[in-house]
Image 1 (cartoon, rainbow, N blue to C red):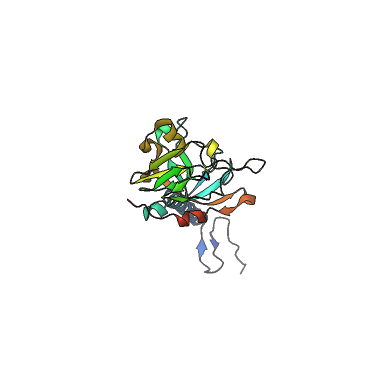
Image 2: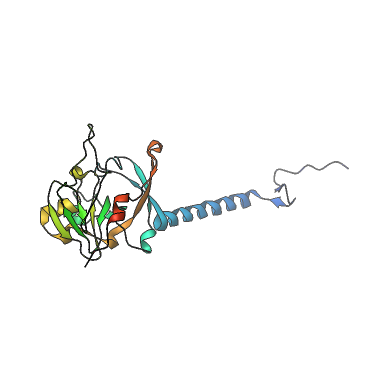
Length: 226
């Protein structure tokens, strides 16, 4: 009897089970796997982690133009933002220069109830009477840092709101600038619920990779007295 050769129309046998596996089954599995991957990616992007591109120099040189950061979108479902954290938030309409400026990234300086003042006798911003040693502020080509603020202010942050500032103070449209422009602390602060998430790592470009931690100077700030 002649050995029978499988015809081109016969399904191939799976190497381990010996059972036939059709090409249709392979493509069906592939579609399912791609679908699952897309769903996982959607869930992660929507609810857990998202990338954010730095469009301006308002946070230099902590974050430079075209840097990319990862933003934890889940953390503030369990607690409010804290002083010193870098947050992405939906900007109030009055803060925006164009319709496209929907989201900003700044550092939290004061939370609800905090008294934020500029400046003490050494030119430092104080929070609840404690001066901040803001070593993260932008420095020019000669190593000279931005002043913490060129304009004086003395505000108490309303409950449920945040006083936020960029690390490049002279180039940042932030709470200080909006307070100087309006004199209204509500216009100068952002609601906690507008915060999208916390930027926790700078991942691009790779040579600038770093964790975005809270500077130690904020550890000494006491809770508000009110």
